[in-house]
Image 1 (cartoon, helix red, strand yellow):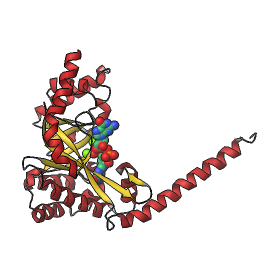
Image 2 (image 1 turned 90 degrees about the vertical axis):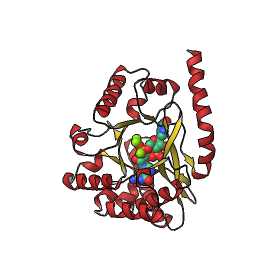
Image 3 (image 1 turned 60 degrees about the vertical axis):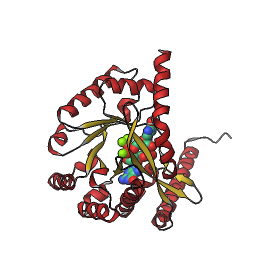
Image 4 (image 1 turned 30 degrees about the vertical axis):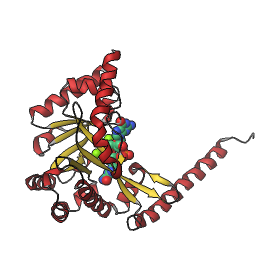
Length: 287
Ligand code: C2E
Ligand code: MG
Ligand code: MG
Ligand code: MG
């Protein structure tokens, strides 16, 4: 028990690193098979237009690993990216999300996150157009979420890609706004329909005046440019009420609804107005 010296620590650390690497290698190998084995599936998180209308859902990818259980996208998407699998997986996500959205009321949109691999493949617009056509979904029901990371390279091509999608009638959202470079030139040059304010600025809205100022400014800036604003990661009724007061167009987060399976959507749509309405009223009543 006395041998907890520097070398012991280094050994433990190396063993832990080795385990991690082995795990990663195992995941990488089973991920190659996950798609054909039907282990990937989508959950859906609602978009709520204040006070309580469901206007659509965002598709979020999950992997039900036979031994490990459900693995979140933050863990396996980087592996899929590094392994060149994300273009194919992303195509599956697009088609699956469009097909499942056909079972919802026709006013509701479905948002799909795009990975850099899909965006840089050069065939994104063809793939999207073909899927929309095959599935038979109205183009304006599909929303593609991209992050600023994607826009860093090949700017001219990117503008072309987004403009083509825009002409097809597909909506484009800028996801995680505020966490990357947030260059204002993106807002000037790209045809975004929606800007999603990252949870980073929402989480401390109640206590942090700087977050309030930043969120208020983003909303005003976006509205001035004719872009709609969604707040991500809304967890409390106080955050929701503040955002509504500041004219935020759309709210998303665990307070409004956690990601759910496709089978739970019908029930969710039926219950949400009462549930959200009641939660907001209760806090109002309590002060
Ligand atoms: P994102 O697109 O910004 O999605 C929001 C993430 O925040 C989701 O995590 C969601 O479950 C989580 N979230 C939502 N509301 C709350 C809240 O109130 N509190 C907290 N703490 N978290 C909340 P998830 O599902 O683990 O996804 C993480 C990221 O993985 C996504 O971030 C997105 O960038 C990526 N991702 C998910 N699905 C796909 C996909 O099909 N393709 C690609 N390329 N990326 C995906
Ligand atoms: Mg997203
Ligand atoms: Mg986001
Ligand atoms: Mg985020």
